[in-house]
Image (cartoon, rainbow, N blue to C red; front, side, top):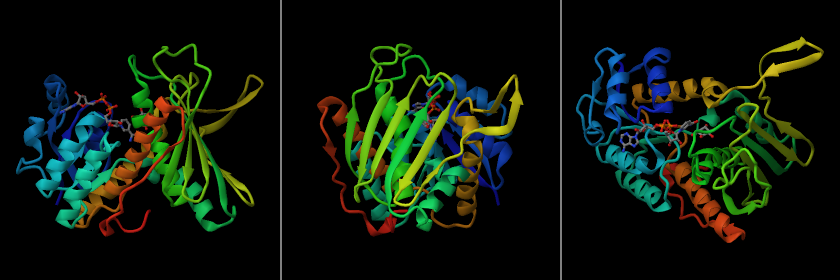
Length: 338
Ligand code: NAD
Ligand code: ISE
């Protein structure tokens, strides 16, 4: 039986996930779309047989909707995720789970009271082959004790009006999650280092933004987030361990030798770089729904832990000091860290 999905938010990633759910993965189909911009919802729904346009406030409780995908703006996620938990429907929520720690705590409290995990957060890098190899290299012990993790998040370009808040909540949030997942420990401290301003960026944007996170065991994780990476979308990560290093291989396609140079392509944006990861992420989620099991992917706890760190980065941007992170106790419902 095919799972009937309702999607809230038909913007960039909403449309990409709708295409994926409709044309790429098996076991689900999109029956309802809601967007604050009704004309956008109408246009997208028109291309999908049997798909209705529904008001966001009614989509979760719609009896024709079995499970919900939330791809609206970050600050709106908590409302829809809480509604899905109240309706006891599985919900796949794009990152961030919520933009405030208080909202994340409300979500955890609601799920814990229900006693069942219904929420999966869209930390799709956990489904990327290269990130999985990096994590396996660390877990194998071959590198010895991990000491440092160097990360870069270079966006080729960003939409006009892109803010420092988005750099932190939408971009660096991925490095926070991958660091926790690769190292299998929480982040406990954050500093923001001064950088020279990129003349291509508006003065209001912290670009590049250079953040150093510290893990429980003392691993330092430096994250360079560049909103005007200029040459393409480039995500890098390298673990430096006691006995060796391991890094992501990020170039794509065949190696070309021409005009006196050897080169390989660099992805244009996140849709291209992580296309297989998004496909795997949603296929596994749908498979779990079909099997009637709780989502096994990144959960509400992972969402809360990431938001606790983004909150601390915002404090550090203002204070210029190291900001510490104190997480509430992790409920048993969420099991071990990863
Ligand atoms: P977007 O602005 O392109 O699209 C958001 C859509 O949501 C818009 O169409 C907007 O009208 C709609 N919307 C906003 N509030 C709404 C509400 N209350 N009810 C109904 N519709 C509403 O943004 P985007 O780039 O698609 O990002 C959306 C979310 O997905 C963000 O949280 C972002 O961080 C996340 N995202 C994740 C990835 C990833 O790699 N995992 C990539 C891109 C975006
Ligand atoms: C976007 O929202 C994403 O989640 C992408 O994965 C990220 O790389 C990009 O920086 C964000 O804007």
